[in-house]
Length: 285
Image (tube, rainbow, N blue to C red; front, side, top):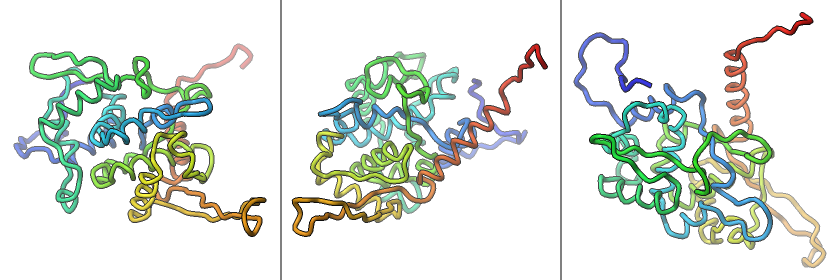
């Protein structure tokens, strides 16, 4: 991919690009769909028993910036892997900078915090050892569990992924949502990849995801305050409960993050791929 990001306007424009413009280019103009894809193993290891994955490790270590930066890197990777020149630190910082009413309360970044965060990702084996190319450093993601080189997930039964709508970036939710809220958002995105809502057992959250009950409570409150959380109460038979039943809350996501919206986005992306695919004619036709 060429490094030329100019528009069709032949006139000179010395006005620097804004963070919003950088995110719009990266997520809506250069990305092939309206969402990014992340393997389930980012959130939870397969199998039974203790299933804590990288997400739980990051939450425990309070590595909020590392999680956001990794999500950005993987979200941009479909086009970034073809980019001739590595992105500068200034470009990464501009993409991550909160603006407007979010600037005062959003996640903050500096050149030093960006460098430390890339170090954290390297320690977590979520990026390859960095290589300097002239003045810039090339950053290459590793698989979401840190166990292998990165490839785009296939979506097969042994390589499942969930989607994160690009509105997460364009609305600046990436900057305003705290680490507990972001963790619970990713958990529900993963768990509603195929069902409308999910019951989150507080007693099992640490074993299942490596997230404490306190973090889950805070994360649900953040999603609720941002009007992203749907809640449905169901009554379940419980032989040892006083009344023989107990009430559980099943959680879903609303708006652009809902299962229905995400399914619509995936169907639209598939239609575009199918339309672009070359057609073949069999000998019988």
